[in-house]
Amino acid sequence: MTAAHPAHHDDVVLSARNLLLQFGGIVALNDVSIDVRKDELLAIIGPNGAGKSSLMNCLSGFYRPKKGDITLGGRSVRQMAVHEVAGQGLARTFQGTHIFSGMTVVENLMVGRHLHMRTNLAQSFFYFGAARREEVAHREVVEEIIEFLEIEAIRHAPVGSLGYGLRKRVDLGRALAQDPRILLMDEPMAGMNAEEKEDLARFILDVREAKRIPVVLVEHDMGVVMDLADRIAVLDFGRKIAEGTPKEIQADPAVMKAYLGEDGP
Ligand SMILES: Nc1ncnc2c1ncn2[C@@H]1O[C@H](COP(=O)(O)OP(=O)(O)OP(=O)(O)O)[C@@H](O)[C@H]1O
Image (cartoon, rainbow, N blue to C red; front, side, top):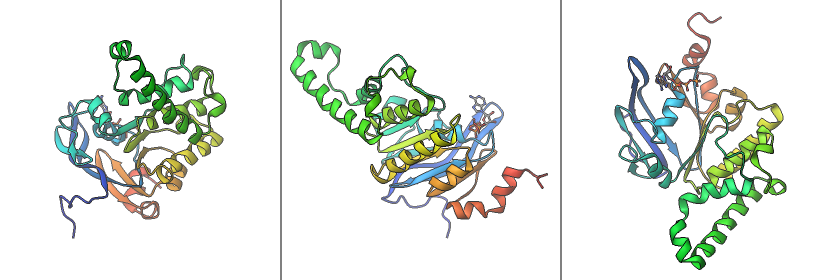
């Protein structure tokens, strides 16, 4: 039985229902629904312009869909400001790198902790001891992430001095420092060589397996997607045309048609 509104299962962390997003006459998302379950890596794929980035931007509260709803941990994202969505446990990495290149690795990760810092600058002036203790606690979390991502040797290096692969790893660290309940990654492998891809893939798998944080991944590299994903959702012209395991998706005629086009071989 297929229901238009499937029951909300306990293991669903993030849920989008019947999203409609338009840019003028362009329908970027048309009645798109997805569920992200606990402990899974869900990949979102589709040809150029299919709506993948639009969907990520809706999930993170950056775009407001015209219709539909998104719930994160049972709460509606629609009414939340972007920083509130982050406060509810959604972290994301972006295309390219969104880290501060003049700052060191540790400093960038501390920026990720900022969300959890209680004392602001004015308070820390008056309550120096409390602020100091809080900083030490955050530093411990950051050190744990540094160890997890195997970047101990570069912890004090300015991020701008690092190669692209390492910078992306620091960006992942910054997102993890938010202590997220779900992680969204938008084309993390773009611009990487094979070795860098392999490295990052290993850490993405560890995020799900060791840290038990579900991951939503938009990625063009099909090899990476088929290797990493537990499930795949396929978008084409703003619609979800398929959803299933990598095996099911590889055998789906509608997916092949979308990728090869009507005039494909
Ligand atoms: N800010 C915007 N203003 C106008 N149109 C937009 C905007 N963002 C996306 N679109 C349009 O919405 C559709 C979906 O775009 P989107 O970027 O979500 O696709 P995508 O699957 O991420 O593509 P790509 O793989 O090329 O990154 C496209 O037709 C695109 O031109």
